[in-house]
Image (tube, rainbow, N blue to C red):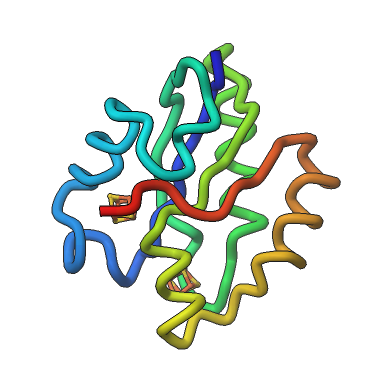
Length: 117
Ligand code: SF4
Ligand code: SF4
């Protein structure tokens, strides 16, 4: 069982995807980056922390809350929306740097992307 959280781009959510329905479908169908998990437990879903890439304090708070609820995170997926923001928008997040920072600081695995729809 993979206990995951999904982060979405605060600027894109509900503009390109409504209500995150694509990620819910992706989890159900093990589409895209979800295919690497046998079973998925979605523990939390929240935004990236907003521009200019305030993801570290966001994940710190997320970790504190999920630990307090006794549902600790193992994996964070940056949603496909975040990947698109980095690749085609003006998102200031450098994924490789952010991945190393989050994994070292919080002991979680960070994956880029979710569904392929
Ligand atoms: S890619 Fe996923 S997390 Fe991002 S807005 Fe779409 S459904 Fe939500
Ligand atoms: S562009 Fe990047 S930093 Fe800004 S809200 Fe979207 S994902 Fe977050």
